[in-house]
Length: 151
Image (tube, rainbow, N blue to C red; front, side, top):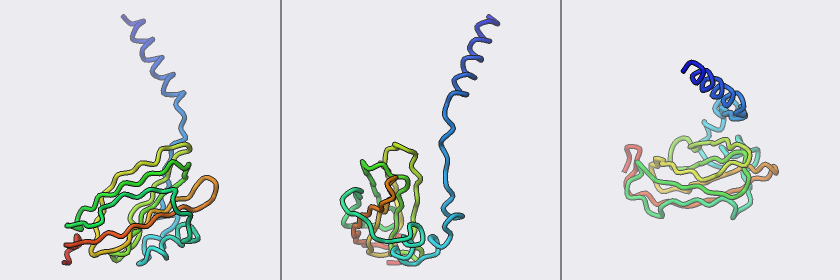
């Protein structure tokens, strides 16, 4: 029995040591603090990526055209492109930046998230490809009841 326990522990330790340790997260609040203070998405995108221009058609953003309650608006962001990061912005709230995701090499871009919006606004999904190019999509969401304490 001791031999089996030794072999189990040893093989587990070996397997763990062979797992690549390439997963890491970037703290965008530290590396790009002005992104999180910008009131407009164009300004926040420029702070994060250096430009607000992007190639359309690569990132797919699925959001409701009409959100009855701005307190919880579902979003789905997909792309088949090999991106290194993808971010979400909106102009309805006092701060435009919503989220920034680092994507591991050859990672799958298929994110579901919910955001709050005070009023009707455009939602922008912006991504940076491993090729250095920027990709962008914009969708307007009409909000009936504001999700941030305003109607």
